[in-house]
Each structure stands twice: as structure tokens, then as C-alpha cells.
Length: 577
Image 1 (cartoon, rainbow, N blue to C red):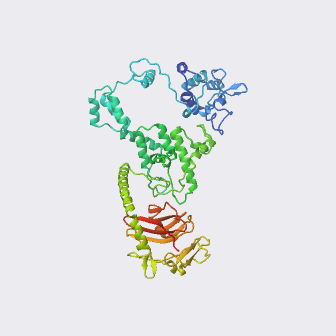
Image 2: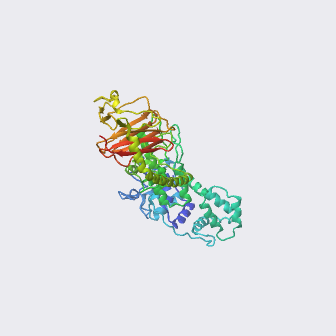
Image 3: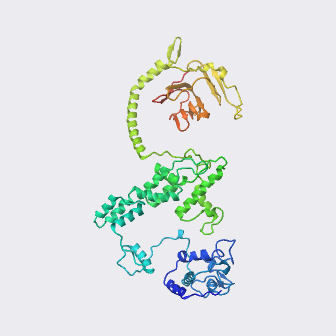
């Protein structure tokens, strides 16, 4: 085979010599398509331990020979192989049927002559302001970008098109910025505006429009794998539109790109992050999820982390990272070790591998629409005013209430003994000294957990009659009553005496574990009284915990009332004998 550089190739070489050859733009594509299969990153297919994608390897002296000697064609073995007539020496080898064309040969020749300068991966090259190109028609450009356009047109011998008429101009501009045609009113407004900055005013109007934000957000949502469904298996719904709206508002309000980046990648980790910053980090929750029965939870949790690494690399670094999950990346400068360092940033997520098709998987944040937020703020102002009125009324009535509680409700006379006044509609009054048969026996071992329960025993004295002393996990079970409905007012209460201000445990309760814990209870939490009323935990439930602990040697009166105006009364009362 004889390779002859014809007149066109020589002419191309002369033209290129006047220009600066870019490795990334001009040379790398040639090496990738014609050379790197045998002299590239793949150890399996690499020949002669030579790599043209790495400067050190290409310039290395091998027994007096250099594949590339910068600025010296005569001593560059690469050049001799390119122009060789020997089928055993020529590169690329004839059997590959991947011959270099004249223009590619001219580019490689000029590149070596100019010093064979290598460039790093384009994603890591700092942008530089280029010098303005020389042009012949200096009157045509209106800005610096026009000079680059005209330079290329003049190079290719093409004349610029005539300036578009104003009707065409506003149509092109509107389509470009919004993806929509302008309305007739918008066209007429531009045609009738004779001011020198009429065009700029249209640009400003479009950039501030909802339509522009939607057009830009569409591209970002595609890259961010946005979707209001869970994707895998039985595709269920999930609410991601608050994140979508955050992106729309970011574009509409021209949010700085650094803020746009920080809030999406780690908005929930910012100090005192607000709701919108936490919503922004929903970028990391857009990936596909699964709850399929045969899925392995940890496997898919890892898949979610991998997805976040891949998407972040693609969008913000402009490069692929996923290859390095299994091996050092062949074409991007990312090692497997570096990949898992990056992976570690996302490997502390709280969401589980097994997700749900019944909406968003925790952790989540409550988000309300702007309209609902306005109503909420108005309601909160009204509630604050009413609370002040209630507090004033409570202070006015406090003395009267305390006298009523002491004199009439708690210690009303019943013959020779004292006891509580029974309210109207009483469902049950449980005298605790009458439950000998219901007590937990000493040291009963439960079948469910094989643990020893505590015990409950009757004491002779109490606030009214006898009482119970509960130790450990002891309890009293009372059946046959207490099925109360949420839409019917009810109240319940008891007297409790504690000798330790830090005790915890349930005092009384009725809950159906198999029906989302539907029911109610009264309990102590490190000495603080609390109560639940639950229809469905946690979606429809009320939980109240007192701010103050019970004082040892004092008793607790607890009365919880459920009605259209629910409230909880928990107060200390003087010790009883």
C-alpha cells in the first residue's frame, strides 16, 4: 500500500499551520476513532504498552524511539508509521480498514509540529476568554459573538443572511425563549414600538415570563429524571410537584447558579433550612423506586445511591461516572476509588431500599400551596387573637374553677365518706380495689416475648377507697366497655400517685394495634403526662405531652375530653393519705 499526500492535503496542512490546533477539538476525535483501540485506556487490547491518550506514555523514550517528539516530525515514530508504505509498519494497520484521510493526517502533522500540546478532560479545563477573530466586514457585527459567527462564515465563503423583518424577529425570539408562538397582541405591540430598545424590552418581558421558566425547567427536569410516579413494578403515585415548582420559581426569579446547585444537592443540610430549601433537595429523591415482593431492600438502597452519583456527575460535572462503579473509567479520568469516595457523600441517606407505592416514602416534609399558605397565615392570626381571649378568660375564672374542683367535684360529701361526683352519662367508674381477679399474677412469663411481667396489687388506701400499686410491667385488664366514637364527646381520667418524678409507662389505654392503633390512652413520659386520641396513626391522630413533670408525693388528676372543641386538663393536686 502506498500512501501519497495529494495537493489538497498539502494545502490543508499549510492552512492549519497558520492556526493553533486544539487537542480536545481537533486531535482527540482522530485518536479516539483511529488509534485508541490499540493504544488507549483498555489494558486488554493495548499494544506495545503505548497510550496516545496519555502525554507521558506518548512522549516516553523507548530504546531511543519516541512515538511523539513535540515539534520534531523527523523523530516522531507516529508520523513515520502514518506515512509508511510498508503494510507491516503503516498505522492504522490495513486489516483494520480504518485508514486516516488526508485532512486527519494534516491535522496530526500540524499538531506535532506545533509542539503536540495535550489538554485535560474538557470538563476540568478552566474556560478562557478567546481572542476576537479577525474579520473582513467590520461593520456587520453588533457584538463580540457576531465576530465569531462572521469569522466562520467568511472562512467558508458564505455571506450573512439579510436582517429579518420585525415580525419574523419577534416570532423567532418568542419561540426560542418560550417554545410558543407570540400572540397577535404581542406582535402588534413590538411592531408599533419604535423605541431604540424595543427588542431588549421584549427579551426582558419573555425572560420574566412563566413560559420561559417552564421551557427551561423542562430541560432540567428531564436531566433530573423527574416523575410523579415510583416507576418500578406496580407504578404508584408520589408527590414531586413541589420540587418542580421550586425549579420553575428558580428560573423565573433568576436564582444564581451556585445557590441553585447548593440547595438541590444539600438544601436540607443548610443551617436552619427553610421549607423551600428542603423541597429543593428533592432533586435527590426523583429516582425510580420499588416495593416489589422479591426485591432485596439493601440492593435497591444501593441502587438509589448509585443513581444519585450518576445523575449528579452527568448534570454538574458534565461527565459519566457510572463506569467507575466496576472499574477505573477508561475514557473519563475517574478511578474506582474516586468513584466510591464520591459515592460516600450519598451513602448516608435515610430513605429505605424498600419503598411504597402508596405515596412518598419517609422522610418527607409537609408542603402547602401558596394559596393554602395564605389561608393558614390568616387562620393563625385569628387563632392567636382567640387564644389571648381564652387566656384572659382562664385567668379570670381560675379562682372560681379551683374552688369548684375542690369543694364540689373532688370532695363532695356522700354520707360519712367523701368521693367524686359522678358526671352525667357515666359509662364506667372503675374502683381499683375491686379488681382482685384481673390482676397480673407475680412473675407471669409472656408467650409473646418470653419476658417476666411485673405485678399489680391492691392497696387499702387511695384517694377514694382502695387503689392499685403497679410494679414493672404489671397491668389490669378490663373488658367489655370503652368503644367510643370520634364524633361523640367523651372524657376519661384517673388519679395517679408517683414517688419518682421520672417514671414512664401507660396509665390507661385502649388501642387496636391491627387497626392503625385506633383508640386512646393516658401515659407518663419521664414524669411528663401525655395522651393520644388516634383514628389512624400517624395520619389522623392527636398527641399531647405536658411540659412539666409530676412532682413526687403529689398526685395527678387527668381528665381528657374529646369533642368539637377538644382539650386536655392535667394538673397536680395536694397529696392524699
